[in-house]
Image 1 (tube, one colour):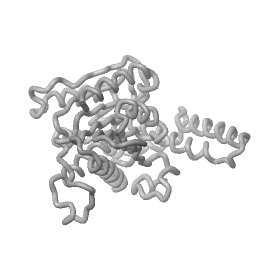
Image 2 (cartoon, rainbow, N blue to C red; image 1 turned 180 degrees about the horizontal axis):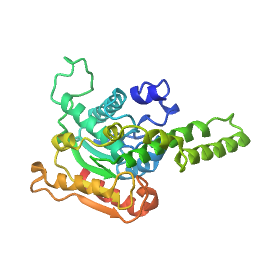
Image 3 (cartoon, rainbow, N blue to C red; image 1 turned 90 degrees about the horizontal axis):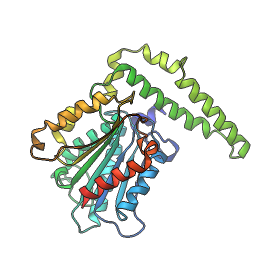
Image 4 (cartoon, one colour; image 1 turned 180 degrees about the vertical axis):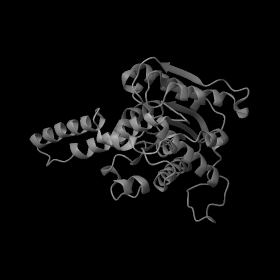
Length: 314
């Protein structure tokens, strides 16, 4: 699991939900809209399915690329980003309309993926790809020519506290263990039920007050914990084109604190490149679970996404 998580080389990506990717293509003719869904730490492909269905309703012909969690700055994460770039290029090569990209990211894990995507895109666009040994079905356009909007859910924080790091890591471990234990059965209803019960017990032990995972992490140097968890916001400020943005976060989030999101929001407003552009849209919830606003406030979330996506991609 550790090797897969760091490198992203999987014979069967669906067997490891932690760093899987997936490209959802329309049954009919493809349009020029591409949506990147960049998940949170511990998020599975199944956690993105509701969004896939929503975006498919909004843009029936769009291509949707899903990237789940991987280690910050790892080779595996860069491989996942490369898959996203190829998916976008494939879609645009099949459409005569202007290419359009919408990014919808979750937590700092999604922000890590977006950071890598921006850097990779910047290195490839406008270059002689054949000379670099890279094959794409078309020259990669500049990000500023394709990006239409960014939705940030529970993100980001460029200065995550050690305790928030521990909380996030514990949840990621719990998600991985839950998946492993809950699928350890022979397929019979009885064994499935036993596996589900064992999975719940394992998760309870991992996230509980006497968690050995928490104890192990609290023994580690604070800098080691926070370095891989905090977002590299300076890179994003430098490379992200000035486009409409939608922030969605909660005041009681104990992983990505509201203060961290609001600090980044202020930095965004101060970017020279955004002078004259409308301020980002903000939806701040009083109480809502980290990265699960789409479930706890489903109808409002869906309307928010549809309004933003429809207005920015047309």
